[in-house]
Length: 108
Length: 108
Image 1 (cartoon, each protein chain N blue to C red):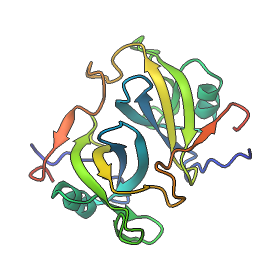
Image 2: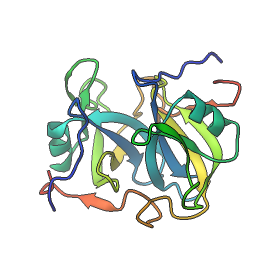
Image 3: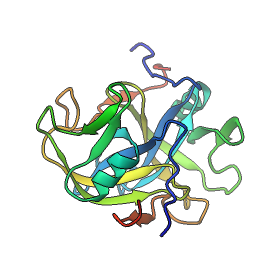
Image 4: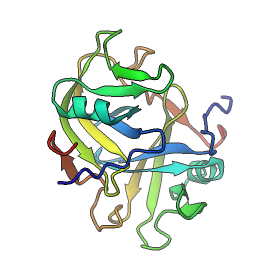
């Protein structure tokens, strides 16, 4: 298959991480080509940190690495879905998932 | 709760849609403030189409609307997760999900 991932004007593509067992959506962050290559190599999930402007080996600080199971692209190649096994809480707050705040129509 | 969604420099925030029953990740698209407000009002999922540059009532062309169950934000307010019930295939290809192409390390 040809390389048909559409990186944006900053060379990034959004990547959703989902727990391969529970199906829970854990986080979303951005990958550049090298982060995607490293993620596809198997082992851990890698991102590109937009704030630090560098490759980000998720878990390198917290110890909570995310182990890759499968990597999918969407129909137009501009979003990645990683099915994975987290080795600990994914969120920097200590929550299992970054999506722990529910919105209501009063919020926006 | 204060309005703490971080819309990007184009006024958009990425929104993941997940099947509320199966947990399957169905698609990702972008919402502006009005699309998020309409989605939070209950009923159908709305996006902002970056290509057409207009509000996008998902399903208005195909008839395959997506019914909102819950809306979540992530820890830093820059990604939305919508748990929902699709009324038909979500993808324009006719697939149930937009994530139907698996990547391997040969792909990138």
